Image (cartoon, rainbow, N blue to C red):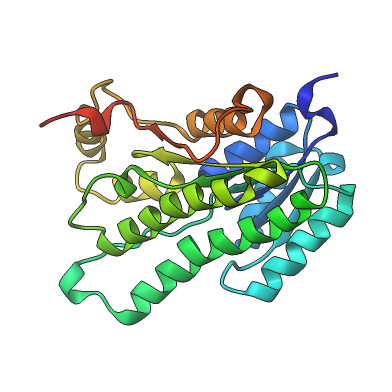
Amino acid sequence: MAYWDDKVALVTGAASGIGQATVWRLVNEGASVIALDRNRDGLERTRAEVANDERLMALTVDLRDETGVINAVEQAAKWKGRVDGAVNVAGISPAEELLDSTREDWDELLDINLRGTFLVAREAARVMAGGEGGAIVNVSSVLALVGDPTLVSYSATKGGISAMTRAMAVRLGPQRIRVNAVCPGDVATPLLNNWIEQQSDPAATRAKIASSYPLGYYCEPADIAGVILFLLGPDARCITGANLVVDCGLTVKCY
């Protein structure tokens, strides 16, 4: 029997990009997956992509709604009687200019990116602590580690996720719950691809982004999904509190 055959995982941000790729990979490895997102149409596309209703439950939930998050995780736990893994992908990255940003912009970013990640991790940990333990993976960013003058608030939320991951790892270790983070650079999600297509020369923009990476390319959602599965699985049994950088070499450059 494969490792994932009797396992249950919860994934937020499942309507597209990294979340959708992670759902697809988990189901195809044999896991039962609860896919969460506020985008109902996107969740339906994920369901169609996976095409396995026996091992996929899709729930529409807005991470700004604490009661909704609690109820969703409760439903997930009741579905198969357990939750072995939780993956926090959901997040937003709006355009920002620091001096023109508003309190409302700041609050929305914190509510979804940081508070939403906290709520899902907390509720999943409560289920795992009452069972056999488990693993939580939070999607942070290289901007938790380096500075980007155009994304100050977003960087603050990702830095918070990375710090929270370390603290949760220490707190939840005695309950046999591992907590790690993935820190991607640019990823070819619909959000990034749509932005590129809006530029005057999409091909040149894409090439310029790729050229900033030592490897000459940036990640696809499936690349990050593969790392997430590693951190959730048995090969990472001794890894907790890590912030694993997956950025095609971006942050190791000195200039």
